[in-house]
Image (cartoon, rainbow, N blue to C red; front, side, top):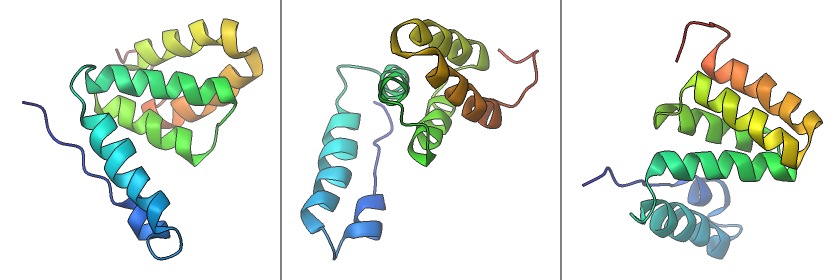
Length: 113
């Protein structure tokens, strides 16, 4: 059995202002969707990073998901290959932006897997 993902950011940031959105964020997106066992969490992390990159979302949301990917087993070598592959489909400038964040998350050491 895998560790259950629990999210409270929606309620903390928007609970009183937008309670329905907070519910969907915390209970449905991160609750039901991220805890569904048809895909492993590492794969979900990769899909999320690729989706955000493809949309050009290279802000704190992407950095959060890059850290989540690293914490769930995506290596520096894997993220470099994922971003490089996706660059051909999503856009070269987007890859540059993602690499800037990925270097912050994984560091610049070349001997890391």
